[in-house]
Image (cartoon, rainbow, N blue to C red):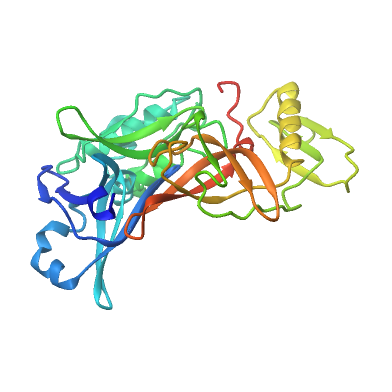
Length: 367
């Protein structure tokens, strides 16, 4: 299947949903999603085409979508159309980027705050409700009904938003999520619905986004295109973990998990200020020590469309088994997908994935 027949790009009016152009002749296309961020799209068009179709690419109004095989793979808002040399470059970002251009000018999200011991997922939904409740502000994004055990705000310091600081809504949301801690996580998605309309979604996950996948895998000689680099570094290695928990000064919770493994003693401090129990602190220290004793990490792979993992079969946040074999090393482990990137103009049947070792994450008791 050719790149032209497989991939289609189109634009819509963000307020009305009207199609502005059904098939943009884009070149140098690259797009992808990310964990706790909007992801991005970039592409180029010929100046002659742009000059004749200016209404289809209005920054701050036009949505742009990438479709393959009848499925939406990416959607977002065009923010920049910039002439460079002999071409126009388009820059777009997905739905959460919209909140970076919106402010809380009422204060406390127009009466929804302050919050005490509130679920951050609730606050995130309230942020979007506030943004989309203003005139000409309804982007039509649906936020997942996910709930979490995390808490925001205390009686002494409630979660507030002050109008005179004109806080950026995107900053308010991003301060409520965390890639590494037991906090909600998000990514941006879009899909066709049964009636043909487009659903724009902020996917919320707790205690994690994504899942451990046993139905797909990435392997050298199967669907990994070229042998990726496997990094071995003692910078992240440790055989002694010094863990600190809640409390101050001499009352700070404290645990040490050492092991003698025939290597030079290398220590790492694990700060967990919200952990109150010494037993929990000890378990976290032991888990961190076991993780840091294992060297080797694959941070990026390029894969081809294959029955082992068809393009688009994964989601941001998924853990997938990765096996790399080349002339220098053999490495296998569970890796978490934290971003993906497609380049249909040059490699229509491939995707590049940004990875992090799955054992780098601790999701707490809820996982």
